[in-house]
Length: 388
Ligand SMILES: [Zn+2]
View 1 (cartoon, rainbow, N blue to C red):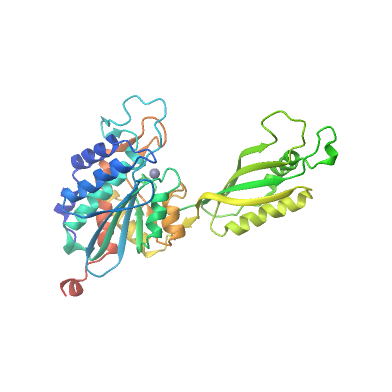
View 2: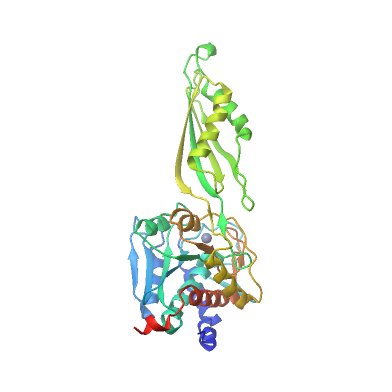
């Protein structure tokens, strides 16, 4: 079934390097992804495939390529083209890849333009080897993953259906099978204003909020064998920014909460309300969840897709993968919201969101090969119906 020589051709390291370098050279902070998406679309057109722009908002399209090859399941290969902002400390131009031994240094090198390159090369290779598989491959490069994930959300809202998904984050050493969810909780505390010379006549929202802040440690957190739930107070505001002799009437707190499978938005807010109840506070507390919201996700190791992935990975690496859990992002949406069995896996790299981010050159081609072997397993060629 597998044409080894073709696999080797598909993994040509130099082409993977050139493509990654081109992608890195086009600055694509969240909000300015259009130019790099035009490059991705043009590359596919030049290689005989038909890209499609999918609107999200503000001229920030996703790019989709569908390779249809008879009836069968659909495999989604997804990556994001936006990068975080360049920080201080780079020893070379972040947008001009520096090659040193088997590494490429550049902004987005591993997060995740090498993953995008691997997905593009794998998609082209699959379009050229239709005898080896049957079904549909969808490649998507989405926008805004480093901010609100508007790209992945638009893709899901468009009615995307897939039977399996690879999110091409740089997880070569430890492919990822799940992650905690994330919610941003705004708490509004309302007391009663009064002249500060007679504080007993008011209800001091700052004091009541502080009592709640001190009790945050009492809020129960969900337990999970491989993920950690957490809670962190991000900000606390109360009182007038201008000097006035008034008991503060309102306070707001912003809380970051990571939740694990088994916890829901409702259960998390209920746990907070029961701690507030125990405070016997005269103030009122209102909770609301603000975007971006990410549900937790987990693909069971016993899932047939994970079995196929383990085989494809082992054929390349010489041993099976050691899985990890963590690093929230678009996979939370594809798996946690859309319910698509997902593995997060891509080229090897380091210095994520730091100066001198790098990707491992050999791992880009190796990722292409794993993706091809995975596609052959997930989308097996059926001799009878393929010829029908
Ligand atoms: Zn990323």
